[in-house]
Length: 106
Image (tube, rainbow, N blue to C red):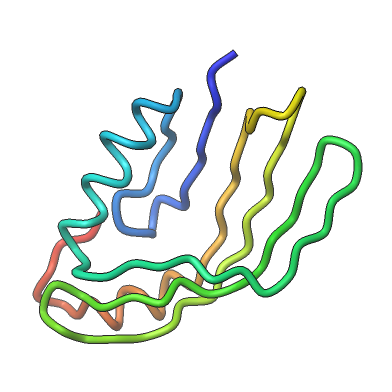
């Protein structure tokens, strides 16, 4: 079963990605066009059954040199030791402001 990643449509390169290859080659390759640095720093992790919830920040530097921390929450589904789904929620207003009006992110 392919993993399904759902990223908010208002987040850079947002949308749905199905399968590890799509996540790696489409989402991460595309998002790095906006950023020179992009690190996920989890602050909390809560797990129950197949569900895992994580909160934290993305510590980013845009391709134009603007830096900031963007709050996120990830809701994961894990089955038999494999990630089968991710639902991402993030402060898209903050990331849009950081990227500025000169860059198309949708």
